[in-house]
Image (tube, rainbow, N blue to C red):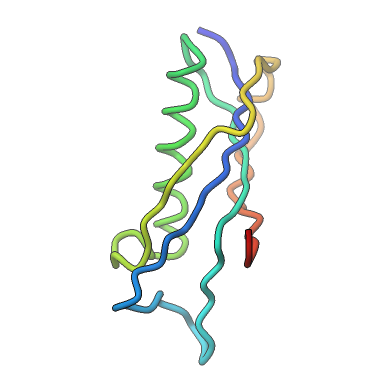
Amino acid sequence: MKCYYVLVHGRLNWNTTSSPPDGGGETFQPAGFYCHRYVLASTIHNAQEAAFRRVRENLDRQTGWITAEAVKLELDAEETASAPIYQLLKPDNRGHTFYEQE
């Protein structure tokens, strides 16, 4: 098992029949986001799958967009690289850097 750094690009395809849950009057519908995760895995493919699962669960926990079926999420690994094992000891950065247009 090795530690891997995975830079994840998420594309958000919005369902036009529903709007995302938000706390205010305006509807926030970004086109996508970037984030990264450090994961422990045996192969690069397993590392990407683990990162995708964690990103998907975290995004839905924070926004509720996936459970509400307001969006379809497509995830791609922009970069995957070996990383020092001590990165796993740090708390996850669970933020997402959203963008509005591709």
